[in-house]
Image (cartoon, rainbow, N blue to C red):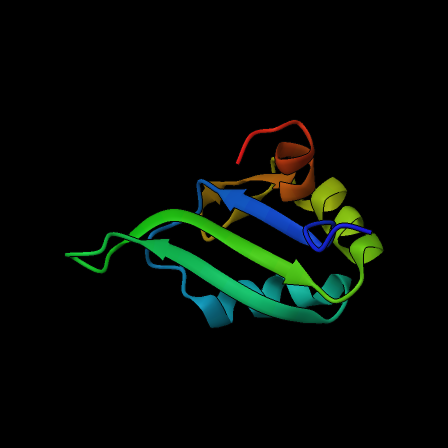
Length: 91
């Protein structure tokens, strides 16, 4: 099993949404081991995408199916599995 199987890419969220809000929202699908918002190195402002890692890959799949295209803090989000990118040679 790939270490990336339980990892999701979430893009398009509100730049005011923080790690705790994302963890609170996505943890309804199962235990989360990590939430990393990607930020601009100089301004430390969110680039509006995040990597969320679930302890169980099945929970990640459930979250992806349920949340892709949904609204979070007034923004429509895109949710996809990171494993799909890494297995296709994109990283």
